[in-house]
Structure formats: C-alpha cells, structure tokens
Length: 219
Image (cartoon, rainbow, N blue to C red):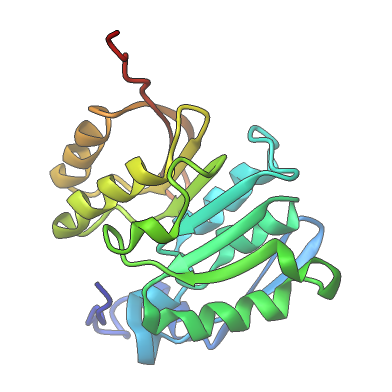
C-alpha cells in the first residue's frame, strides 16, 4: 500500500528531509544520489533510516555479495538494492508498479554503465504473480522497513517463502514500533530460523536474518 502520511511539517522538522527531491550517501566507495518524490508517491518514494542501516550492514561484509543473486522487496527508492549491486551482487529490485519509474531512474543514475546489468527493476506485488520469480532462486532477500502494514503480512510471508530456499539469507531491517511487528516476527519463525544480527541504537533499527527451515521428507 502506498499512502501519504499526513503531519504538521512545522511541528516535526526532522521529517522535512522527506520533502527533499534528492538525497545523497556514500556507499561502496561511491556517491549514491537518489531522487525522492514524497508529493507523488508518499512513503514509497523517500529514504528511511532502515535502508541506510541495512546498507551500512552490507558494507560490513558479514554477507557475501560477490556474484550472488539477490532481490529487494518493497524497494521504494532502491537504496539497498543499488548498494548490494555496487558491492557485487546481481539484484532484482522490486516494488509495486507506481514506484517503478522512480526506481529505474535511481538505478540508471547510480549503477555505472559497465555494471548496468547488475541491477534490474521488476514489478512485484507481494503474494501475486510469484511464478514470475524462481522459487528458492535467490541467495539473498533484502527488505528495509517493509514490516509495518499488518494487512500485508500474509502476502509478505508467502512471498518470502516462495523466494527462499534453505541457502537463502533474508535480511529485514526495521524498527519494532508496535505489537503487530512482533507478531510478524513470530509468524516468520514458523517457517524460518530468525536471529537479530545487528542493532543500530542511534536510529533504533534492528536487522534480522532469517533462514528457511528445511522440511523433512518422509519416505
């Protein structure tokens, strides 16, 4: 779901950066400059802290990225997927259709010409059309601040289960804001082994790593 989140800009000056038309970071020894479009796409088109912390974690080298097949869910501006590609992964960067033009712009502007094939943009609405993506076909699944709408949780869980195999690392970066967020993690643990691998206290962002549980086949 994409929706504007109303607020009084004067009372929350820290959020005024969301209205900037671009934002700049330094990751993977490169300047990453992303276009934002809050006025048109709302929360889907700005960079949130979870994406920044996830990129910081990827730079730590705890996850092998070179030559790995990765997919980013609910990518928004595409920051995490772009950084994963710059660090050597082959990344499919996904979101719902209204966000795709912005995603393509950011990929084009930040992936060097000789690496353009490292990142492709694709439409993915969770739980729908999953047959277009290889079942268990990814080494890494990325999600930054995608655990926040309770009505999307069943579709998100189905999507994670489809994309993952026992060798897949699912990295979810999020704030734990409400009881429903813990409910999602509990539901995830029914099919995945889940551990917290990083916590950034200043931004209050947790990163969870989930690995799909193997099912025993009875002969």
